Length: 278
Length: 286
Image (cartoon, one colour):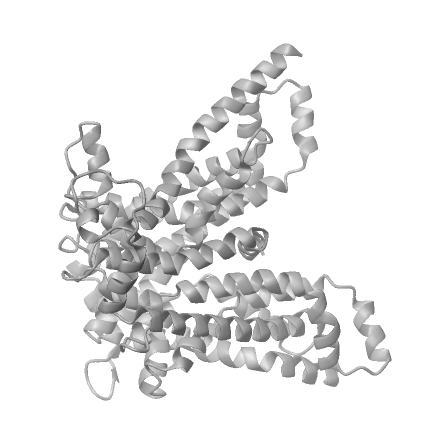
């Protein structure tokens, strides 16, 4: 018994001895992002090693705002992410419901196309998407361009389909016997039951929209219609720019999502794990 | 049956519309565009133009080579690290689990631009914390942005930092679905922990690890933001230019959509081939 607890102790020490340095390395860039965001540029570009925050965060926010309208870009990002998330959850829930609960002509065809193309790289569609939205529809630098094309994402359909198909069918049949209309069954019975799945999906979609870079970079490149990542990206690589300001922007982009992550970690992880495993 | 058709398509229609317009049709369209001369107005079909150019273009081979090198080094390193993270996080002996989970999973939610900016500062040649720390242990400063080998290493480090936790989440959920009693039997038979890991855990995890490999191959194949922002548009001198970056420059800077579409389809084909190869290797060894 004694030797067992001793070996457990050794294993515990080895475990933490291995994991703690790794965790410190992993946290280091996030910590430095925060530290840089509080330092003036002459502090960031000084020969000494500085690992603790200073007090200049608000100065850096002002520097950033002088370089680009970051607050405006943040506002666009928030509005886009919220509208996108609501629309995408709604569309994919409806589609998932249809695929889970109805037998209809073309059902296996639709599922086949979704599953068969879900792993194709986004690069394959980005050029025609751009040509269609910018040239054919003339919608570059618009809200529609930011929100609508990314709604194609089919992960949510599979996600919601799974949730709906696990619900007991008698529930819906009973309602049908009572004469409840199909859309009411969906809205009043199925959706409330699928709330946990919708929450996990919403978080993943919000995150995807908030961090989306390539598409907004291509389609909304006009100052005043840029999202926050795009606005921040335009500053990286410029010579006369406040790096403290860029870091303050990075913190403003990252902190809200990290807080959401900490608060809703379980949903986040469920979303990533389930989305991946299907 | 008729009623079911009507109801089903009423629910499906809005999504199908977006899905067809912005996913299914573009997949077909970019294939068609890759056979067109897009530098004349209106565009005309010219079957060998772009594909012929592709296979003789040194810029394409450079980008292909860089992408494959990153892929071959980064994906195995990251998946191994993610497996280690997941296994250790799953240990019942672990204290302060929440902090460790936060450390490894937080990069998953950090945006590409934000992390690219931090990595540029951290790896700054003269004032970056990394070179200062390396100096502390007697290593002379590395020119992370001027030396193309160092720049490739930097890209690999950055991508690994960002995505290892993502894969660890998936692998961890796989670990947690392995029933306890499998190990109990092995423990009774005095099979060592390490042996248990090699002979029980890894084989059971194999499908999930393979899945992570496939996902990572597809992701790394399209690598764009890191070489675009961290190593300054694929610098030094194309040293970190990837296929994703080449596609971007051809399509959106040179507005040569036809050639860029040929590059896009090459990326897709490579991703599919490498994924299938992985699945085939996985099946073979079973």
